[in-house]
Image (cartoon, rainbow, N blue to C red; front, side, top):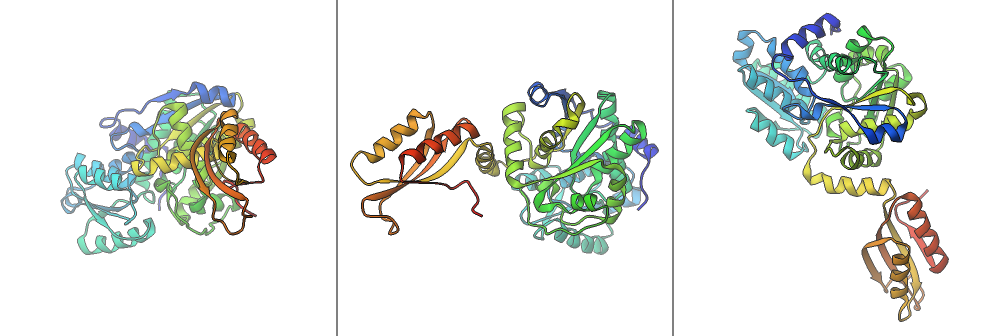
Length: 408
Protein backbone atom coordinates (compact mmCIF):
# COMPACT_ATOMS: atom_id res chain seq x y z
CA UNK A 1 0.00 0.00 0.00
CA UNK A 2 1.26 3.46 -0.93
CA UNK A 3 1.44 5.71 2.11
CA UNK A 4 -0.34 9.03 1.48
CA UNK A 5 1.52 12.27 2.06
CA UNK A 6 0.49 15.81 2.98
CA UNK A 7 -0.39 16.64 -0.67
CA UNK A 8 -2.84 13.72 -0.73
CA UNK A 9 -4.47 14.94 2.48
CA UNK A 10 -4.73 18.51 1.18
CA UNK A 11 -6.42 17.17 -1.96
CA UNK A 12 -8.89 15.23 0.19
CA UNK A 13 -9.53 18.36 2.26
CA UNK A 14 -10.41 20.29 -0.91
CA UNK A 15 -13.06 17.70 -1.78
CA UNK A 16 -14.49 17.11 1.69
CA UNK A 17 -14.60 20.73 2.85
CA UNK A 18 -17.12 21.43 0.09
CA UNK A 19 -19.60 18.86 1.44
CA UNK A 20 -18.77 18.36 5.14
CA UNK A 21 -18.76 21.25 7.62
CA UNK A 22 -15.80 21.59 9.97
CA UNK A 23 -16.63 19.91 13.28
CA UNK A 24 -16.36 22.08 16.42
CA UNK A 25 -13.50 22.02 18.90
CA UNK A 26 -14.32 23.18 22.42
CA UNK A 27 -12.26 23.70 25.56
CA UNK A 28 -13.60 21.73 28.52
CA UNK A 29 -13.32 23.72 31.75
CA UNK A 30 -13.70 20.80 34.17
CA UNK A 31 -11.11 18.57 32.50
CA UNK A 32 -8.71 21.50 32.12
CA UNK A 33 -8.90 22.32 35.83
CA UNK A 34 -8.85 18.68 36.90
CA UNK A 35 -5.66 17.91 34.97
CA UNK A 36 -3.99 21.33 35.06
CA UNK A 37 -3.74 21.64 31.28
CA UNK A 38 -5.87 23.01 28.45
CA UNK A 39 -8.10 20.16 27.28
CA UNK A 40 -9.92 20.57 23.98
CA UNK A 41 -12.52 18.16 22.56
CA UNK A 42 -12.65 17.67 18.79
CA UNK A 43 -16.28 16.71 18.27
CA UNK A 44 -16.47 14.18 15.45
CA UNK A 45 -19.66 12.97 17.11
CA UNK A 46 -21.34 15.89 15.29
CA UNK A 47 -20.61 14.49 11.83
CA UNK A 48 -23.76 13.56 9.87
CA UNK A 49 -23.13 9.88 10.71
CA UNK A 50 -21.90 10.55 14.26
CA UNK A 51 -18.32 9.51 13.52
CA UNK A 52 -15.08 10.56 11.78
CA UNK A 53 -15.45 7.54 9.48
CA UNK A 54 -17.47 9.64 7.08
CA UNK A 55 -14.28 11.45 6.02
CA UNK A 56 -12.27 8.52 4.65
CA UNK A 57 -15.22 6.61 3.22
CA UNK A 58 -16.68 9.62 1.43
CA UNK A 59 -13.36 10.70 -0.04
CA UNK A 60 -12.66 7.17 -1.29
CA UNK A 61 -16.06 7.01 -2.98
CA UNK A 62 -15.60 10.49 -4.49
CA UNK A 63 -12.66 9.13 -6.48
CA UNK A 64 -14.59 6.29 -8.16
CA UNK A 65 -14.79 6.19 -11.95
CA UNK A 66 -18.20 6.29 -13.62
CA UNK A 67 -17.93 2.56 -14.35
CA UNK A 68 -17.14 1.81 -10.70
CA UNK A 69 -20.10 3.90 -9.57
CA UNK A 70 -22.40 1.83 -11.78
CA UNK A 71 -21.26 -1.39 -10.06
CA UNK A 72 -21.45 0.08 -6.56
CA UNK A 73 -19.32 -0.26 -3.44
CA UNK A 74 -19.01 -2.79 -0.65
CA UNK A 75 -17.48 -2.69 2.81
CA UNK A 76 -17.16 -4.66 6.04
CA UNK A 77 -17.75 -2.77 9.25
CA UNK A 78 -18.88 -3.03 12.87
CA UNK A 79 -20.97 0.09 12.34
CA UNK A 80 -19.32 3.50 12.02
CA UNK A 81 -17.49 2.83 8.76
CA UNK A 82 -20.71 1.25 7.47
CA UNK A 83 -22.60 4.49 8.02
CA UNK A 84 -19.80 6.51 6.46
CA UNK A 85 -19.80 4.35 3.33
CA UNK A 86 -23.59 4.46 3.12
CA UNK A 87 -23.60 8.27 3.42
CA UNK A 88 -20.80 8.69 0.88
CA UNK A 89 -22.46 6.32 -1.58
CA UNK A 90 -25.70 8.27 -1.37
CA UNK A 91 -23.82 11.56 -1.78
CA UNK A 92 -22.07 10.40 -4.97
CA UNK A 93 -24.92 8.42 -6.50
CA UNK A 94 -23.84 4.81 -6.16
CA UNK A 95 -25.16 1.76 -4.31
CA UNK A 96 -23.61 0.34 -1.15
CA UNK A 97 -23.62 -3.18 0.29
CA UNK A 98 -22.32 -3.47 3.86
CA UNK A 99 -21.32 -6.72 5.56
CA UNK A 100 -21.65 -6.29 9.33
CA UNK A 101 -20.95 -8.72 12.19
CA UNK A 102 -23.99 -10.51 13.55
CA UNK A 103 -23.34 -8.84 16.92
CA UNK A 104 -23.25 -5.30 15.49
CA UNK A 105 -25.33 -2.82 17.53
CA UNK A 106 -28.92 -2.59 16.31
CA UNK A 107 -28.73 1.20 16.13
CA UNK A 108 -25.74 1.09 13.78
CA UNK A 109 -27.43 -1.49 11.58
CA UNK A 110 -30.60 0.57 11.33
CA UNK A 111 -28.74 3.83 10.73
CA UNK A 112 -26.76 2.22 7.91
CA UNK A 113 -29.99 1.11 6.27
CA UNK A 114 -31.49 4.57 6.78
CA UNK A 115 -28.65 6.05 4.73
CA UNK A 116 -29.69 3.82 1.84
CA UNK A 117 -27.28 0.88 2.09
CA UNK A 118 -28.11 -2.81 1.87
CA UNK A 119 -26.92 -4.61 5.03
CA UNK A 120 -25.73 -8.22 5.09
CA UNK A 121 -25.21 -9.65 8.59
CA UNK A 122 -22.60 -12.41 8.73
CA UNK A 123 -19.59 -13.18 10.92
CA UNK A 124 -18.83 -13.10 14.64
CA UNK A 125 -16.49 -10.08 14.39
CA UNK A 126 -14.99 -7.60 11.94
CA UNK A 127 -12.38 -10.04 10.60
CA UNK A 128 -15.05 -12.66 9.80
CA UNK A 129 -17.26 -10.07 8.10
CA UNK A 130 -14.25 -8.85 6.12
CA UNK A 131 -13.69 -12.35 4.70
CA UNK A 132 -17.34 -12.54 3.64
CA UNK A 133 -17.15 -9.11 2.02
CA UNK A 134 -14.03 -10.11 0.06
CA UNK A 135 -15.88 -13.08 -1.39
CA UNK A 136 -18.87 -10.95 -2.40
CA UNK A 137 -16.52 -8.38 -3.95
CA UNK A 138 -15.09 -11.00 -6.31
CA UNK A 139 -18.57 -12.23 -7.21
CA UNK A 140 -20.13 -8.81 -7.89
CA UNK A 141 -17.30 -6.58 -9.10
CA UNK A 142 -18.18 -3.91 -6.54
CA UNK A 143 -15.36 -1.65 -5.34
CA UNK A 144 -14.25 -2.54 -1.84
CA UNK A 145 -13.97 0.44 0.51
CA UNK A 146 -11.62 -0.63 3.28
CA UNK A 147 -12.13 0.82 6.75
CA UNK A 148 -8.44 1.78 7.06
CA UNK A 149 -6.08 -0.09 4.70
CA UNK A 150 -6.46 2.30 1.75
CA UNK A 151 -4.38 5.42 1.00
CA UNK A 152 -7.47 7.39 -0.06
CA UNK A 153 -9.31 6.48 3.15
CA UNK A 154 -6.26 7.43 5.21
CA UNK A 155 -6.00 10.74 3.34
CA UNK A 156 -9.65 11.45 4.10
CA UNK A 157 -9.14 10.77 7.80
CA UNK A 158 -6.07 13.00 7.69
CA UNK A 159 -8.24 16.04 7.03
CA UNK A 160 -9.13 15.90 10.72
CA UNK A 161 -5.50 16.70 11.49
CA UNK A 162 -5.66 19.79 9.27
CA UNK A 163 -8.74 21.02 11.13
CA UNK A 164 -7.11 20.49 14.51
CA UNK A 165 -4.14 22.66 13.52
CA UNK A 166 -6.44 25.33 12.14
CA UNK A 167 -8.53 25.41 15.32
CA UNK A 168 -5.67 24.98 17.82
CA UNK A 169 -2.38 26.00 16.12
CA UNK A 170 -0.32 25.66 19.30
CA UNK A 171 -1.53 22.16 20.18
CA UNK A 172 1.00 20.01 22.08
CA UNK A 173 -0.74 16.60 22.28
CA UNK A 174 -3.40 14.92 20.14
CA UNK A 175 -5.05 11.79 21.54
CA UNK A 176 -7.13 9.38 19.45
CA UNK A 177 -8.25 5.77 19.65
CA UNK A 178 -6.90 3.04 17.38
CA UNK A 179 -9.00 0.45 15.60
CA UNK A 180 -7.29 -0.47 12.37
CA UNK A 181 -5.17 2.66 12.53
CA UNK A 182 -6.51 4.77 9.66
CA UNK A 183 -7.47 7.76 11.80
CA UNK A 184 -4.19 7.98 13.68
CA UNK A 185 -2.20 7.38 10.49
CA UNK A 186 -3.96 10.12 8.51
CA UNK A 187 -3.93 12.61 11.37
CA UNK A 188 -0.33 11.78 12.19
CA UNK A 189 0.87 12.41 8.65
CA UNK A 190 -0.90 15.79 8.56
CA UNK A 191 0.15 16.86 12.05
CA UNK A 192 3.78 15.75 11.88
CA UNK A 193 4.19 17.26 8.39
CA UNK A 194 2.98 20.69 9.49
CA UNK A 195 4.01 20.70 13.15
CA UNK A 196 6.58 17.99 13.99
CA UNK A 197 6.60 18.92 17.69
CA UNK A 198 3.05 17.60 18.20
CA UNK A 199 2.95 14.44 20.31
CA UNK A 200 0.58 11.77 19.01
CA UNK A 201 -1.07 9.47 21.55
CA UNK A 202 -2.97 6.31 20.59
CA UNK A 203 -5.16 4.02 22.68
CA UNK A 204 -6.94 0.70 22.31
CA UNK A 205 -9.30 -1.48 24.29
CA UNK A 206 -7.35 -4.07 26.26
CA UNK A 207 -9.47 -6.85 24.73
CA UNK A 208 -8.48 -5.77 21.20
CA UNK A 209 -5.03 -4.27 21.61
CA UNK A 210 -2.81 -5.89 18.98
CA UNK A 211 -1.67 -2.55 17.54
CA UNK A 212 -0.68 -1.05 20.90
CA UNK A 213 1.24 -4.21 21.76
CA UNK A 214 2.95 -3.96 18.38
CA UNK A 215 3.85 -0.31 18.94
CA UNK A 216 5.37 -1.13 22.33
CA UNK A 217 7.41 -3.98 20.84
CA UNK A 218 8.25 -2.08 17.61
CA UNK A 219 7.19 -5.11 15.60
CA UNK A 220 3.87 -6.66 14.60
CA UNK A 221 2.49 -8.66 17.50
CA UNK A 222 -0.55 -10.88 17.85
CA UNK A 223 -3.07 -10.49 20.65
CA UNK A 224 -6.00 -12.54 21.85
CA UNK A 225 -9.21 -10.87 20.69
CA UNK A 226 -11.76 -11.13 23.49
CA UNK A 227 -14.34 -8.65 22.26
CA UNK A 228 -15.11 -5.19 23.58
CA UNK A 229 -18.19 -3.01 23.92
CA UNK A 230 -16.06 -0.31 22.26
CA UNK A 231 -17.12 -1.84 18.96
CA UNK A 232 -15.79 1.08 16.91
CA UNK A 233 -12.23 -0.10 17.63
CA UNK A 234 -12.88 -3.84 17.85
CA UNK A 235 -10.15 -4.90 15.40
CA UNK A 236 -8.35 -8.06 16.42
CA UNK A 237 -5.18 -7.99 14.30
CA UNK A 238 -2.50 -5.39 13.63
CA UNK A 239 -2.21 -4.74 9.89
CA UNK A 240 1.52 -4.71 8.95
CA UNK A 241 1.20 -1.71 6.60
CA UNK A 242 -0.70 0.32 9.18
CA UNK A 243 1.81 -0.66 11.86
CA UNK A 244 4.68 0.54 9.66
CA UNK A 245 3.03 3.98 9.38
CA UNK A 246 2.05 4.29 13.04
CA UNK A 247 5.40 3.08 14.31
CA UNK A 248 6.93 6.21 12.74
CA UNK A 249 4.26 8.60 14.05
CA UNK A 250 2.92 7.56 17.44
CA UNK A 251 4.78 8.89 20.48
CA UNK A 252 2.74 7.28 23.28
CA UNK A 253 0.18 4.47 23.40
CA UNK A 254 -1.82 2.62 26.03
CA UNK A 255 -4.61 0.11 26.66
CA UNK A 256 -7.82 0.55 28.68
CA UNK A 257 -9.84 -2.30 30.18
CA UNK A 258 -13.61 -2.52 29.85
CA UNK A 259 -14.32 -1.04 33.27
CA UNK A 260 -12.11 1.97 32.61
CA UNK A 261 -13.76 2.60 29.26
CA UNK A 262 -17.19 2.36 30.90
CA UNK A 263 -16.06 4.78 33.61
CA UNK A 264 -14.94 7.26 30.95
CA UNK A 265 -18.21 6.98 29.02
CA UNK A 266 -19.90 7.95 32.29
CA UNK A 267 -17.43 10.79 32.89
CA UNK A 268 -18.20 12.17 29.43
CA UNK A 269 -21.89 12.14 30.27
CA UNK A 270 -21.43 13.85 33.62
CA UNK A 271 -18.56 16.23 32.92
CA UNK A 272 -19.01 17.18 29.27
CA UNK A 273 -22.77 16.52 28.90
CA UNK A 274 -22.10 14.32 25.86
CA UNK A 275 -23.12 10.78 25.02
CA UNK A 276 -19.98 9.22 23.57
CA UNK A 277 -19.31 5.64 22.49
CA UNK A 278 -16.47 3.64 24.01
CA UNK A 279 -14.03 4.31 21.16
CA UNK A 280 -14.38 8.04 21.80
CA UNK A 281 -14.43 8.00 25.60
CA UNK A 282 -11.29 5.87 25.86
CA UNK A 283 -9.12 8.93 25.11
CA UNK A 284 -9.75 10.29 28.63
CA UNK A 285 -7.35 7.62 29.88
CA UNK A 286 -4.44 9.61 28.44
CA UNK A 287 -5.08 12.43 30.92
CA UNK A 288 -4.70 10.03 33.85
CA UNK A 289 -1.61 8.26 32.52
CA UNK A 290 0.36 11.23 31.21
CA UNK A 291 -0.83 14.03 33.49
CA UNK A 292 2.71 14.98 34.49
CA UNK A 293 3.89 15.34 30.88
CA UNK A 294 0.68 17.12 29.85
CA UNK A 295 0.59 19.60 32.72
CA UNK A 296 0.42 23.13 31.32
CA UNK A 297 0.10 21.86 27.72
CA UNK A 298 -2.66 22.07 25.13
CA UNK A 299 -4.22 18.64 24.67
CA UNK A 300 -6.79 17.72 22.02
CA UNK A 301 -8.91 14.63 22.58
CA UNK A 302 -10.52 13.36 19.39
CA UNK A 303 -14.08 12.40 20.33
CA UNK A 304 -14.32 10.10 17.35
CA UNK A 305 -17.83 8.66 17.66
CA UNK A 306 -21.12 8.95 19.46
CA UNK A 307 -23.04 5.96 18.09
CA UNK A 308 -23.56 4.10 21.34
CA UNK A 309 -26.23 1.41 21.62
CA UNK A 310 -28.90 2.72 23.99
CA UNK A 311 -29.46 -0.83 25.26
CA UNK A 312 -25.90 -0.79 26.60
CA UNK A 313 -25.99 2.58 28.31
CA UNK A 314 -27.51 1.41 31.60
CA UNK A 315 -24.98 -1.43 31.89
CA UNK A 316 -22.13 0.91 31.03
CA UNK A 317 -23.30 3.37 33.68
CA UNK A 318 -23.36 0.58 36.27
CA UNK A 319 -19.80 -0.47 35.44
CA UNK A 320 -18.65 3.13 35.36
CA UNK A 321 -20.14 3.90 38.77
CA UNK A 322 -18.49 0.80 40.20
CA UNK A 323 -15.10 1.80 38.75
CA UNK A 324 -15.50 5.28 40.24
CA UNK A 325 -16.31 3.74 43.64
CA UNK A 326 -19.85 5.11 43.68
CA UNK A 327 -21.55 1.70 43.70
CA UNK A 328 -20.50 -1.04 46.10
CA UNK A 329 -21.85 -4.59 46.22
CA UNK A 330 -21.46 -6.23 49.62
CA UNK A 331 -22.37 -9.39 51.51
CA UNK A 332 -22.84 -8.62 55.19
CA UNK A 333 -23.19 -11.26 57.88
CA UNK A 334 -25.11 -10.20 61.01
CA UNK A 335 -26.78 -11.88 64.00
CA UNK A 336 -30.25 -13.28 63.36
CA UNK A 337 -32.03 -11.46 66.16
CA UNK A 338 -35.06 -9.17 66.10
CA UNK A 339 -33.98 -5.65 65.14
CA UNK A 340 -30.59 -6.64 63.63
CA UNK A 341 -31.62 -5.81 60.07
CA UNK A 342 -33.10 -2.51 61.22
CA UNK A 343 -29.84 -1.62 62.99
CA UNK A 344 -27.89 -2.46 59.83
CA UNK A 345 -30.00 -0.22 57.58
CA UNK A 346 -29.95 2.56 60.18
CA UNK A 347 -26.16 2.37 60.32
CA UNK A 348 -25.93 2.61 56.54
CA UNK A 349 -28.27 5.61 56.58
CA UNK A 350 -26.20 7.34 59.26
CA UNK A 351 -23.15 6.89 57.02
CA UNK A 352 -25.01 8.78 54.24
CA UNK A 353 -24.99 5.77 51.88
CA UNK A 354 -28.09 4.89 49.87
CA UNK A 355 -29.43 1.33 49.75
CA UNK A 356 -30.36 0.46 46.16
CA UNK A 357 -31.02 -3.22 46.82
CA UNK A 358 -31.06 -5.53 49.84
CA UNK A 359 -31.51 -9.32 49.75
CA UNK A 360 -31.96 -11.04 53.12
CA UNK A 361 -30.86 -14.71 53.13
CA UNK A 362 -31.41 -16.79 56.29
CA UNK A 363 -30.92 -20.18 54.65
CA UNK A 364 -27.18 -20.32 53.91
CA UNK A 365 -26.01 -23.65 55.38
CA UNK A 366 -22.49 -22.25 55.91
CA UNK A 367 -23.75 -19.90 58.64
CA UNK A 368 -24.65 -20.63 62.22
CA UNK A 369 -28.33 -20.84 63.08
CA UNK A 370 -28.18 -17.54 64.95
CA UNK A 371 -26.67 -15.68 61.96
CA UNK A 372 -28.04 -14.32 58.70
CA UNK A 373 -26.64 -12.72 55.55
CA UNK A 374 -27.72 -9.57 53.72
CA UNK A 375 -26.56 -8.82 50.18
CA UNK A 376 -26.43 -5.06 49.60
CA UNK A 377 -26.05 -2.77 46.62
CA UNK A 378 -25.14 0.68 47.93
CA UNK A 379 -24.74 4.08 46.32
CA UNK A 380 -21.95 6.28 47.74
CA UNK A 381 -20.18 9.55 46.96
CA UNK A 382 -16.97 7.92 45.75
CA UNK A 383 -14.05 5.67 46.69
CA UNK A 384 -13.21 7.39 49.97
CA UNK A 385 -16.84 7.32 51.11
CA UNK A 386 -17.14 3.65 50.08
CA UNK A 387 -14.04 2.79 52.10
CA UNK A 388 -15.52 4.61 55.12
CA UNK A 389 -18.80 2.67 54.80
CA UNK A 390 -17.03 -0.70 54.51
CA UNK A 391 -14.72 0.08 57.42
CA UNK A 392 -17.64 0.98 59.69
CA UNK A 393 -19.63 -2.11 58.69
CA UNK A 394 -16.65 -4.34 59.44
CA UNK A 395 -16.46 -2.86 62.94
CA UNK A 396 -20.11 -3.69 63.70
CA UNK A 397 -20.90 -6.81 61.65
CA UNK A 398 -19.72 -10.40 61.90
CA UNK A 399 -18.31 -10.47 58.37
CA UNK A 400 -18.26 -8.13 55.34
CA UNK A 401 -17.29 -9.22 51.82
CA UNK A 402 -16.80 -6.63 49.06
CA UNK A 403 -18.13 -8.31 45.90
CA UNK A 404 -16.63 -5.56 43.70
CA UNK A 405 -13.14 -6.81 44.45
CA UNK A 406 -11.72 -9.46 42.17
CA UNK A 407 -10.44 -12.42 44.22
CA UNK A 408 -6.76 -13.33 43.92
